[in-house]
Length: 86
Image (tube, rainbow, N blue to C red; front, side, top):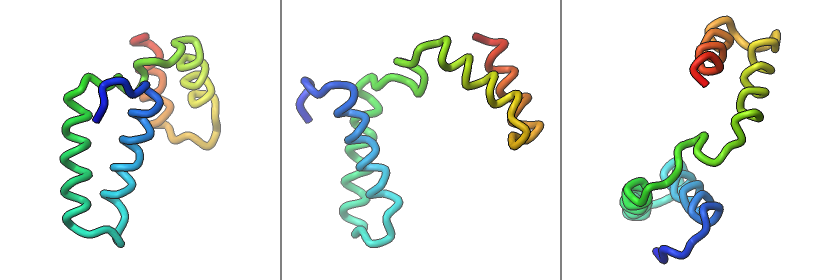
């Protein structure tokens, strides 16, 4: 894989490999290859889930989850803990 891929391109590749792994119509050989590629990408220093996200938007999403009546109490507590640790 070329090192010149943008983070967006790398993210798209990861999504494609994950889709391959979860697709029941894909051969075992293709799944093994997809897992190998994911392992290589994981070692390539890919950013964490929140690596490139704006902290104020993350905080806003957490606050929304805390105040959302559809979110479970466990989910609200987890969001509050994450917000407190920011």
